[in-house]
Length: 98
Image 1 (tube, rainbow, N blue to C red):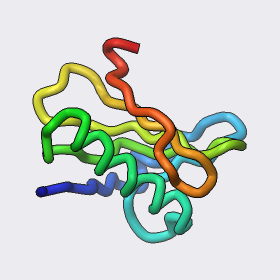
Image 2 (cartoon, rainbow, N blue to C red):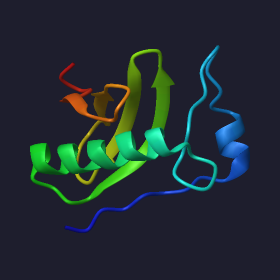
Image 3 (cartoon, helix red, strand yellow):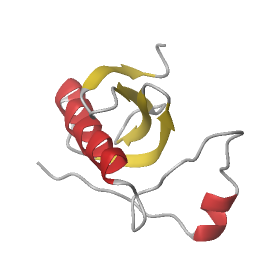
Image 4 (cartoon, rainbow, N blue to C red):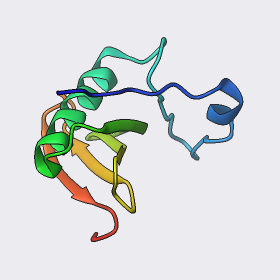
């Protein structure tokens, strides 16, 4: 399975701030729990789509877990994944379908 993580330039990350939340892109400085949630979501979305071309768009810590947005090769919209605080995947879904 060929999974890719992407890193975006700092200028792009700075423009992605969310009110009251931090958003993480793959790279240095990502807390271990966010990295675990991200890796688990990449695997879950790759399994759900039967497509190994999955890459990270961003991950946002929430009070009850992490929300991860992923690009899937050939998909018209991002996929999303929600995890609990331990990084266990709760659900994956195509954002084009809701």
